[in-house]
Length: 216
Image 1 (cartoon, rainbow, N blue to C red):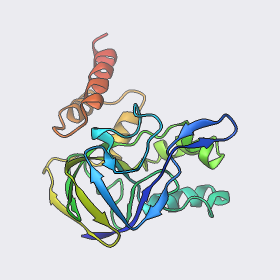
Image 2 (spheres, one colour):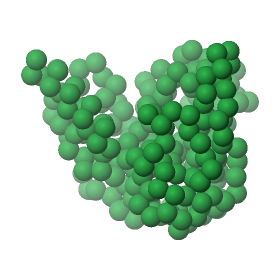
Image 3 (cartoon, helix red, strand yellow):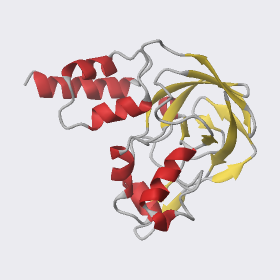
Image 4 (cartoon, one colour):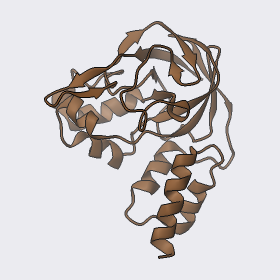
């Protein structure tokens, strides 16, 4: 069991130098109201990739920031909890011990892990580093998204209680390791496709990849 160390929400801002809209910049908050689409008042710029019921909340491990800073020392002062656009920060939880389908209670909110985050170019732009998104993907430190099963309130210091876990679950790290490979093993792809709680968009994408790799 662990506790919430940070909660973050933000509004639309603009990335330099092109002025692209983004919701990656978040401000720390003490208490949040959580609806089916995430924190009330938190804004995402592009709902195709962030936000919505299947990507309502993003959590990023504090230990992943340590890995980033160890490889990119120049980011030490800016690669800090909340800076990569996540909504929740805690100790203990990371990509290796959080599984797709896990159900957690945080405050009065009931959450289920739905998928990993897919790091995009906006991370590179936000940190002014063209290699960062690729580093995050290669090292399986993407963080994870939750769907909201019961709305409610979360506050810094709330316990994060694991309530339910599939005995044959796949961790976020395992999932990203498999999907990042050039030609993933057929059986491993099928295992991912058959994860009951996996976002349907990921299931569709993996089925198409399986068909392309092994039936074309």
